[in-house]
Length: 169
Length: 169
Image (cartoon, rainbow over all chains, first blue to last red; front, top):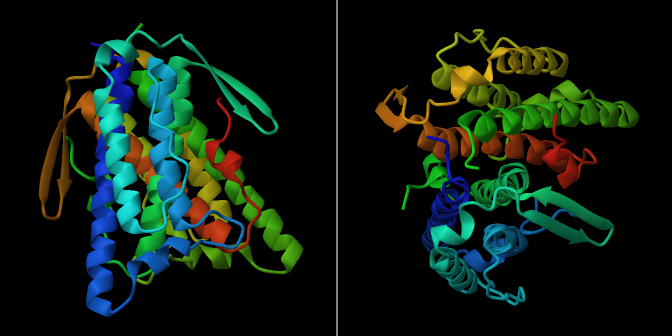
């Protein structure tokens, strides 16, 4: 009855990335009705020293991509953060989804005790696979998804909680 | 090796609620240095038709409280959203943590297939316990935690991602 590691990670990541893609589509559609260039919103920040929308979306892609790569050991595509437009970000989201979907359940299930080491400029953090997934990767992913949603909500894009929650699939 | 339902829910909820409490403490401390009344921030919103900070904190408490109650079947304390101050919200967070910690692991583990029905003004949603936990309760909790963080970050409170991530315990 307990839950396999794949089910703790991949379904939420794919649902959230699909939701993010749909949120960006809504932003483009809303901008078109108001005469704004939606790409101008990519530089929006909650405050000066916080990352802008474009980086929130890039990190919302990297967070699940790297989690799946670390847990499965299967090489992930490299993204160099060269995106400039929402159209570019949609390609990145699609590429991230394609990678995540390419990783078989068998490569993730059973990795609950795999050692995962994250390296930062200031040092490193060591986790086991399961606490890394539920205590780091998942909350980190939802942080960036929510912040991207909040920035576009603040810009006036007509979004609601359902857009954030998305739909399974 | 697979993960029990308790471990999918309670550790993240308790870590996040403790992080929220510490974030509010930082807000009060920062306000004191700048001559602002931190309680004035409770009415901040990202945009007019989105819930203010006070409601984000209340919902960040209700989301895990109700999830634990629905999964375990153990009655949760009732909160009537009568809080007016950050001090009041700290009481609510502490009360929520006390309830969540009072629920034994044995009441949650094994409830992966329990039917959970959420009732909304517009209808109802039915889930099984595990998809409810990972596909609804967890993302909903992090939405409100991140939005509370973002509102205080935007208000100038010196916060960083580590404040959001918190520490296990």
